[in-house]
Amino acid sequence: MKFPLTTTGVAPDFAKGGGLVAAIAQDAGTREVLMLAWLNQEAWERTLETGEAHYYSRSRKSLWHKGGTSGHVQKVKGIRIDCDSDALVLLVEQIGGAACHEGFRSCFFRELTKEGVTVCSPKVFDPREVYP
Amino acid sequence: MKFPLTTTGVAPDFAKGGGLVAAIAQDAGTREVLMLAWLNQEAWERTLETGEAHYYSRSRKSLWHKGGTSGHVQKVKGIRIDCDSDALVLLVEQIGGAACHEGFRSCFFRELTKEGVTVCSPKVFDPREVYP
Image 1 (cartoon, rainbow over the protein chains, first blue to last red):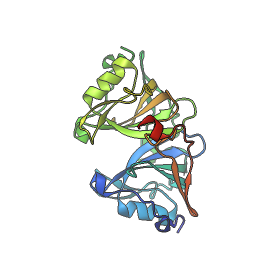
Image 2: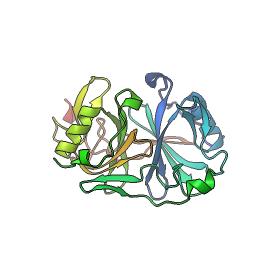
Image 3: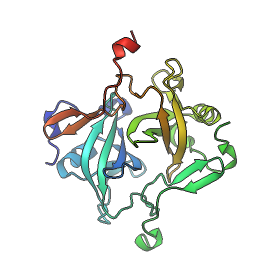
């Protein structure tokens, strides 16, 4: 049990969002926003128990241990909760260096500018080699 | 028109989320995550046109110009979009210094630790004085 938070009295309000809360994964060191995902009660409990980010995959409708297969897990260094208790920030160490399945450090790798779209996050791996 | 992005070919996928995309407001300077909110097509267009963050209030079911009444607007310095095109990061300058209606710089002002809950973002104003 890495975060025995059941004793703190503060918990996400899953009911408000139909069983889900949004979670922003932010690099604990650089503070780069890495991704946005969702947690249900089970994902929350598994995250607290293991200290590794677990999400609820809305497309697969199932628990998702981020990096559980590849080893590129997110070690949770801190958890912040917003004033409405329906959104979280997970301060994480991203093992492997990339949160995005397209190989970029951040899923938010595209920045929109007046001139067009620029890539604003480094590419860490080639997804064709990791997901052949 | 501060961000004439209709010409870039990249746009949020509102259809996937029932007309809404999630937006993370992040301080453009400190990189602190300030809040999580939602945009619909109208809020997106108003944000691009004005260069100030506009959201869709799910509770009020209406367009929400953040800080439109108080003057504590969010000046948009950059817009990032994720790999699925259903989430945004707005890099903003928070006028007045506080994004949270409770007076804290960030809505994520509570950090959950093994010892309990600590306040991790400074209080900028007293909401009883601002919202009497």
